[in-house]
Length: 146
View (cartoon, rainbow, N blue to C red):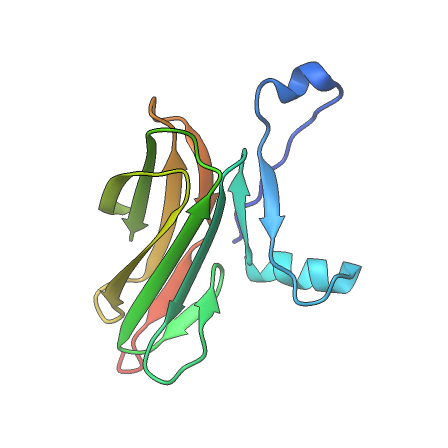
């Protein structure tokens, strides 16, 4: 299941409510490429901030949101930009807060997860009042020994 944003916007006044948009990472800019990326979950939802979440480990190729990381230890990398003052970043692992911090307008952070101990990871971007500004689709993790 892939998280997507949707809105029913008909005029400028509707944009004052900051509708969410899908930011999709496509390999080829075509209808086929767009649908393939959407099905794979290679997207995040946002009202403005831009985020990228990837994972890599061992000798495997890097994976992104929507993908399955298979390995022992995943090194996850997050970049963000265009965030308002006092943005709250939250890394959620298996439905529970894992890391939280107040972020600058732009930045990056890395952390590791042991695939044998966790199943998925997402990133939430919230404003100072706690309103959701962006959320990634998960990166799924599986140990090759499981």
